[in-house]
Image (tube, rainbow, N blue to C red):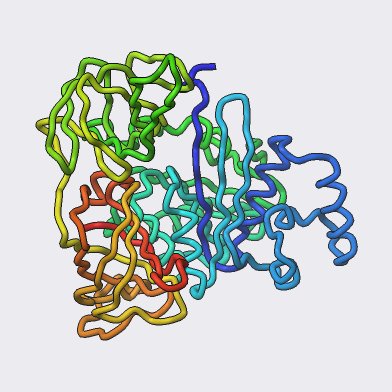
Length: 418
């Protein structure tokens, strides 16, 4: 099967507590026949033991004991399913404010965000926050699912009012493609199957939109970026001179014969071959993982980057970063950390805390001396060696980084380069 035949859509769910995110994913899995019979039997038994007169589909994703007891999502739950048209990875993210970092983690790789709104409650503070984070993370597509339409008698007026409110709010956000769908996750209206209760709605179902939304142009196919992950030297008799450079393409299109430049050395060469799964291919593009060989013997190692001669990323020690802080210990200026960016790793220092964002009003809070866990703020960082980066809005791969505690080696922050 060819690479491009297997299109993978990553999407995340966002919404306030009890808006029905886990139930919606359970309904998607259930109606698309992506659940094994033994799983279904276990969920039916669990629902019956709880005294429910319906199958609680949220139990498919809420796997932690404390989640099931409280009926909420705490950690990010990833689920994989497929239809004949696409493969899907869905991140069910929590709605509570104290789990903002978990939502950022789940949404950071998503092509699409499903933002749930309870039809009875309309736009809430959580809706604003999650929509802002989706915009911040440059998720290209959003579907606003107005859920629990069965509890407002499938009213078109209620739907239109929420659509109008959301459009007024989202004009301040940076999301290119927003669709609105009225659904009931509990009974399945407009999730996989069309609703007979809302004949006034002429748009597509949620599943149809997930299967057909155009995502192939979401990646940057203009700026060629190939961070080196591994240098392959087989050291066998028949391949004594083989030197291949393996990694994942983070942008652009590469072909054999292209003139390239290597960073940080600045030496130029020509691509000799590109291999995918042991076979030579005519072109490679993001996000393919390939092995390249070059016409010239150039000293390249892990962390270096292959780019085009006349299209190079920013190279520098000083970064302006919008960071989500994920650690219980607050972040302060002059802290030493380890930065991981593409395949590069280096020591760095937090030079300055500029401001933090009030996620509910989108206003800046200046004159801060620390960032607490789940805060999102702008900081400046000085690295011990130059990094090759693009702004996050230009390339989500080369524009993102993670911050690691040098003592414990745990991830304590996720950043977007401004």
